Image (tube, rainbow, N blue to C red):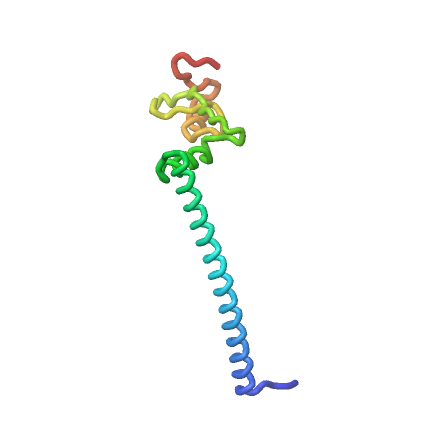
Length: 129
């Protein structure tokens, strides 16, 4: 094939630009189709919420609030609420900082244990190990 002339390089570059433009146009069209479909889904969902609100003598806002509560993180897969662990330990340097003893140690716990080797964390009144 040999050495390409400047004119040949320019033609190849122009071909590549046109190819990329066609590809970009296809991607834009695909994105628009997805946006249109999502818009239709939202319209359908809105209509369903209004229907449920009318059937239950509630406002759409009340229906949405009920849905948010039902699907919030505070509910497990069984639908029962997740119980927050009681706080068991406190930071003697700052009693507003507490820890349940579950999960990763807070920074203040690690610092306390490092400074007070062999000593247990101070318990909140009424709590036991």
